[in-house]
Image (cartoon, rainbow, N blue to C red; front, side):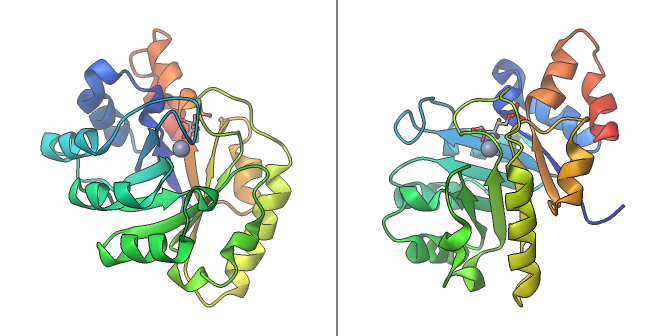
Length: 221
Ligand code: DX5
Ligand code: ZN
């Protein structure tokens, strides 16, 4: 295949057995651990922070950890996640007072930096900072919860983002997050995404009684 990466969102994992769940999806062929950080302020839900990221590293996870910050303010979380072993740190530009500075802080810490675009956030936030961006993440649902449906208009936005990236001199990944399933991933890839977050598609397959459900889904994705 092409340079495609599958990034299970551990938001849908069983948090009481998180280390094991992460080991299992990686063993099944997943490439990246997608780590959703929600603060009950920028989004109406509350999840996990740097301590859990650090615990996964201590548990022995060596795969890239893709930290998706849905927090406001952004900057004071950046250092904690750098120290906790994050690989990618992405944030929502509307949540940062100084987007250029936040991107720079992430790269200065040795991590890859990314901007996340909500369904209604224009891609023009990329203007003037493309040289500091390693990952463009398009939300195909409104952030805050797993298990929502893919918003179809995101396919056009993906094509637009792909065109911008290809027209730039920079190598950026194009990630999609929200409602990615076995049945729509081919269309999403055709629209230009190369990194696919999937939460409920992967973990509910598992929890719905098939002990190897996620092996099957990850292979199909
Ligand atoms: C939503 C999160 C997603 C979510 C995706 O705010 O950013 O990563 O876990 O879950 P699914 O794949 O179930 O839509
Ligand atoms: Zn996410």
